[in-house]
Image 1: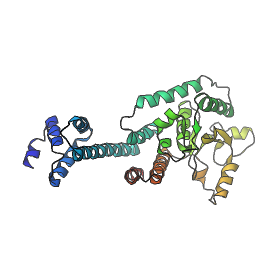
Image 2: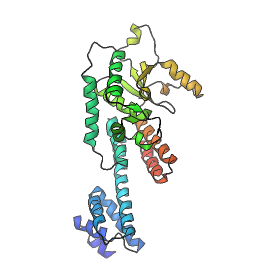
Image 3: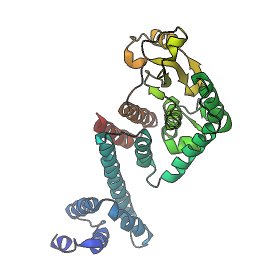
Image 4: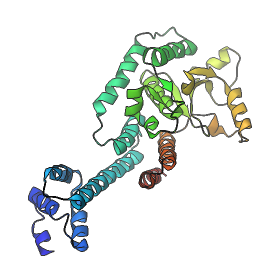
Amino acid sequence: MKYICDVMIGNTSIKALVELIDDPDDNIYEHVRHQLKSFGNEAIPYLENSWGSSYYGIIFQSRVEKIIREIQFEDIKSQVQSWANSSEKDLLEGTLVIARYQYPGLDEEAVRNSIQAIRRDVWLELNNNQTAYEQIKIFNRVFFGVHGFRGDTKTYNSPVNSYINTVLECKKGNPLSLCLIYSIVAQSLDIPVYGVNLPNHFVLAYMDEKRSSFMINEQNEFGVLFYINAFSNGSIFDTNEIKEFLNENKLAHDREFFEPCSNSTIMKRMISNLIASFQQIGNAEKVMELQTLRSVLM
């Protein structure tokens, strides 16, 4: 144990600790594991490079994998906490954090470029004279027609339908992920479209910021001009359909089912969707980790 303490200086200490990972003494291994985790992401390159050493066996490799995973998870948990404590709670930033949970080597620039490409194509066809309905008609044509997004009805519960990078790549997702990308692009264009957290579903609300409903003699107590179902190619509907949906599911007409939810609520819902997905495929470890991440947002 004294030897371990003596080498705890800089990169030399990380290398020395890595060499002790397969020590048969469990107490030494636990100390090594704890110390390596204390280095955080700095230790990961050394751990990954150790796999190339032919003289290390299966126990060593399995322990290395475990330590890397634990370091990465602690980093993600810290990022979720930072996001929860931030005043902005930027939706795209939050979804990127969750994507990095599954894909540590996530190409964040590729995600941003994909979103920017959708935004550019929509922006080219917008003008100040268009009504809200005309804007969404254009948006839908570009989002679903040109870029080919669609709801995944075949593998609805697959975890990949919840990660923004895989949804952007495959052009298909679940209601939440499609609404999320749709709203991120819309809001970047100053189109007032926000998520509505329905039970077992997720839709979008086009907020009546210009009070257009009064001009057409329609009243909406929730300040919404109309709703958008991104899982159904952007179909437009009104409050009555939400009421019918709630009635069918024997649910009360709570305001939260008609009004935009917070970005924190969207993040919790995304993690809950992932928990349900991993429960279905029997991945208990992922379920426990995701439950921990969700608790950070509570």
